[in-house]
View (spheres, rainbow, N blue to C red):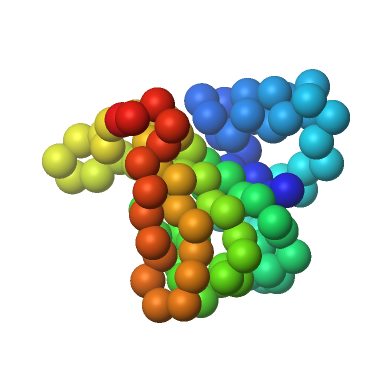
Length: 103
């Protein structure tokens, strides 16, 4: 499992929660060399880096389950919701699905 983001709001709390559940977690961040390599080896990845567009379709593989757990600040303000989207990647653009919470 790969976690992209180590911030105090989402990344580190998510890391500690996953560790409590005995998950093996690789923590990456915005300055991790060759982030794509970490994502290519992951079955599940959490995007909590706080930067829109940090993970691109070229960085992922067709079996990766990518969970967008980030809150991104934009010129219009913060984008709402944690765990707002679950993306199952495929060929071409990401295919997006609603999270189980229905948000």
